[in-house]
Image 1 (cartoon, rainbow, N blue to C red):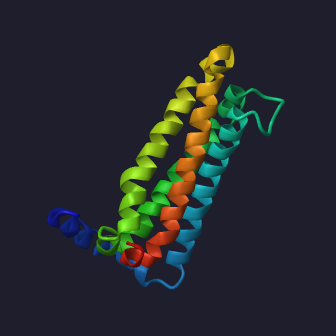
Image 2: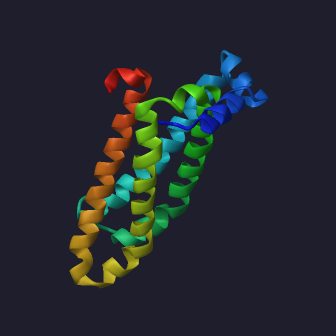
Length: 166
């Protein structure tokens, strides 16, 4: 499970002034939550567009590499917004989240794996446009990333149910 020093960190974090201000406000928490969801929508929407392009679906006017390049700024802006909003939401109930199995699976396994897969795709996508044999690897990684994001979303939906799902 989670170490006691991590739980102590969670206790400290949720008692910081900014976490208490967000948690005790009638309007701040919904705004932070909307910000987090907006960032997720931007981030995953741009990921989805590139992944389906790798599969040969969708935008046919641009290659997957061109699409990835044109969405690069928006993709990482969405990531930054989602990360900031997620951290602020986490800070409000850090102790609770740190013992929630769905949260631990989402943050400890699925998001790092998805992020690494996404970075690999962004680094390799230009080569895939030039090499015909790598298209199957591109399709595989695009499909794998879509599957990982589906798993992240599933874990996120299970967070409110905490230990009831395990």
